[in-house]
Image 1: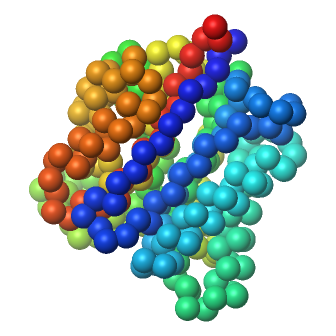
Image 2: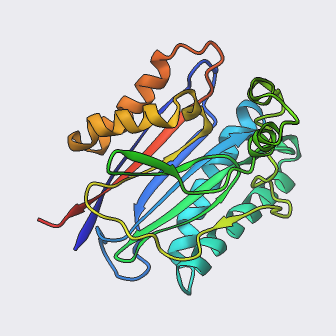
Length: 258
């Protein structure tokens, strides 16, 4: 039987405040008490200024965790239900606090169990799978970045213009209490194996390219999730970007039950 070890670590980067949030919890919906073979993890990157972004990301994470534990049905239904609950929570909070109008958040929520990994995501917070020295992006990017990159691939922009475009990080979908325009919901469980590593991150991780992320995971995987997430965040800080965004990383490692 596979169990899941996990940790998360964060940095404000060059910002004066932290708008990211992350939570990890046993998934106890299917069985009472501790459930080390079932885990739920969620990460949110808030927007809306110091107060709004921090409130939104925390509210989204708390509501998602609470709702997914109470939701009925299969994993896909539970993930979607928890996302919708988080979106409603934002709408209700703004209705009670009009000064926070415009706040919102990305969301990447995951379920880990004997069948593997399932997820739901809105926004541009990446979900990565590391396996055998290589890393892959699992979820969709709901920013303008993929569209600009496609324009570059089609020859309508240069690669330099696409990378430097100030619209690159604008979101096409986010958890704002309004209708969710784009949602990425996994179709079936992705089987996991010992030696894999699943990463949830805010977009501040993009200071590192995927090859560098894979190199760091390779070097720290055997040290456990705590050392791994700290190494990733410290390497972002060491890059010295004067405009570095908040960065938060969650790592989940499947391990054999001893």
